[in-house]
Length: 250
Image (cartoon, rainbow, N blue to C red):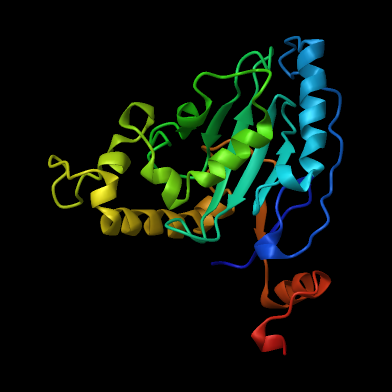
């Protein structure tokens, strides 16, 4: 994977990188006003503030996930998921969480900005299906940390095994249409683990490409969590600041 760093921004560290103890840093967002001028209800304002602050709780923090309110709207949170294990190992996946004005009465929507071959991700729009876990949506029970933990779980085999066709947004990923014959639809994901693993690995590799990682494409929105390439000496400086030692530095 190319060496990179996140550009500084007001960020919640939602995870502990590969088991390391890292202090969670929260910078409170500006006043919750939608840039288009639409009114955010007091209940929504209070809920967003509370749920954002509650991400300090270690039990609410999925490992390897970072999230921050967007500079464009506090109803939009920008996030990155680093996948460390499983079919999608080493994926770097950017996504957004968009809250309706009357949240939590209605659920937020999730959209991946990084192209990813996954049964719950619409390959055309990046839209992500919350249906397997949050149908129906329960405003008094479901919170943002439930969504984040569910999202992470869907990149693991046990959750993938339990998906139903009516909930998916990418039928090809679910049914695994063969690469040789796009008309022929193979058996389900359960019977095609090798093919699925190959396509998931390809997605992981593409997520690390410069065009995906460094926002070189002007067609995608300006994500608050941006990466910049690092030179080898800069990598050593960052690792030194984090007290991380590589084999070469020993």
